[in-house]
Image (tube, rainbow, N blue to C red; front, top):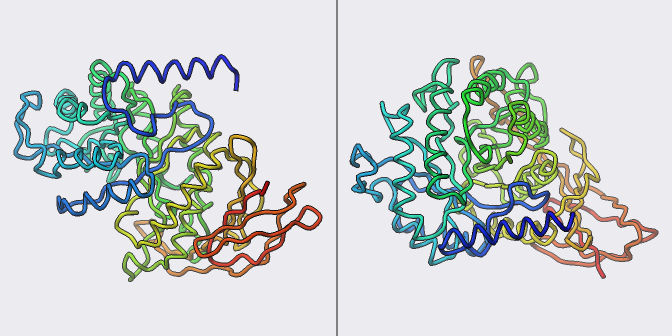
Length: 455
């Protein structure tokens, strides 16, 4: 990196710290233009407004060394009509005072997602902006807020004219977001502001075409933002896979073009400097006639590895800066344990290098190469989890899984060049392996493995 750019970047970070005058998180906000490294987090799922659920989430976030917890912010139903009056009940839907106590207790940052005003006021740009500012006025000083997101998935149930969830047009949404953006930047200039949380859809699907029309109107109406907030649920968004190909087997890279599609959308509308932040996401599609635990722990570990591989491999060209995974705190302990291991390696080797092995929708093992800041190599390897799916109905082409499979074990070959030996780590074992003529060979089982260059 050019030395001048490094100096300017450091000066910018110092200026933000100076202006904020508030508590700084351990992991300061990264430059939206950063070429490598991702922010990690998960979404708080707490519709019961349970203190126990909130505390467990922030405790686990601290244990996993998560950067941020995404917290849905809803307008208090019994609150004042004029949000600036200062008498809103911010503990009605979710006790946000307690949330920020936990954020300080566990030293984990909060990323507010301002879901909606509710009812007929949804389209009122000024009232929405007041709602956002009222919350920030109340809580910004309790812990510095680095990133915010606006309405939740406004495209959902969009019929080509208005959205049932937002109750307005794309132009109305742009007006609402722009009004809030300007007010926030005027009062809290260091906060990075996202769009509404847009749901990703499969490339070239009918839904994607409708979404493109929505974006065109949204961007054309002058929406202002620092980054595109993308809700990316791999395999949930695979409408394309079920159109004329019922029963086709596929893996996570069925969605490999989705980040590039959204990058192109941003660039086409003049937002080439805006990054993509995956602020919400999960690992698997719904399974017909099965509950949420239809995946085994080892399979969830594979899907988490797939998500990291997909986001990391597209981070440079698509300018992805963050990766959230929903529901980590509500799943098994083993899932959290593997997620922690995944994050440790991701932070140790933040620079994605190249794709080594694996083909889209194939059972063949997958390998991605990463490097640390000194160029030391690490390879993430796993056997992909394949799904078979069918359309939910003739009218709704949402993919519903009907089966799953994994080819395991597989004999894996890896060219490590001049490296003489490697360390192989998984949740259950750690071992070393000597290279023979620049190659290593191993039996790759169900668990993803991390292969590190030894000194």
